[in-house]
Image (tube, rainbow, N blue to C red):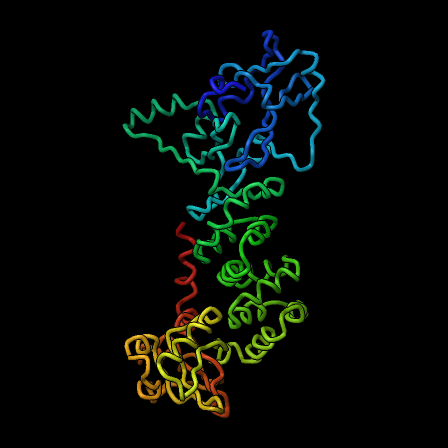
Length: 426
């Protein structure tokens, strides 16, 4: 293929249904579709599909000598071309059939968009799919009205914005295109806020939800699921296969996992717990025992505990070791040998004192605590009154059972509408 024959960039809409000729100028048919295969950076076009009457012929890209919106030509004798009938394969991805007009997740802008056009271009003599056009202009161009659109825009004296998303930010959701872009978007999905992912998931149809969740790492998937409305969350969990669901639960903080399991039918919850790592399952089990509207029901059983004999340096080393596993690390609780809390120290205090200082000297001993069966109101009062990020929860023997964090408490009290509002402002 000689590179000069290919315009640098053109839109799929400008070449679809154009006449394809061979080198002798004979008409082979009309360009019907393009087959796309994964490429190094961008997906590549492997074959042109040309339709003549009822017949569809597949011409490999390397035989194409001209590819422009005006003329497309193939270097091959007619009789050979007509023999290359297209035999559809299951995994084939066709640009017009599978991607144009489909919904995609725009990972960058955290929303579901529709593909109005595709920009193709030349990279190392291969025809690649560079970007998808989700803008109004793409739609006009598809409908053959781009010039009209530009005239109207000029009259209104403003540009019709180009809205194109580079292929690397695109994650098609139809099954036969999913394998193609997941590699690209995986990293970006992980950087999104779970609430944004949740808002995408809540816009999708069921068969797509799985595609998105499978493409996330377990931890991000867990956070996103926890952010969903309870009934959607239960639906999603019931649709995932159990192995996958239990893996996701293992990555969640025990209190979040308990929230999710608490909404599921009992036998499903039990099945998932049985599949989980024993220790993790026990933590969750303990939380499931508590009544939902008590401190115990809001509590997270993971917190930073430090022995009373530690120095600041030892405490910081311990925090460094435990932090990856624990969600709330602002406070470390100093426990005696029987797990009774003796005091609390904030991360800030540890960082601002010399390393050899005994933690006992800087800890706050007048600890504000609640009981496992305390009402959430009580927790909220303490948090508000003392400006706390978390409140320790004690069991009947006065031992530390867990902590209730400010965000879990607020989530209970902020009116539902306010909490969910962020999902709908997209």
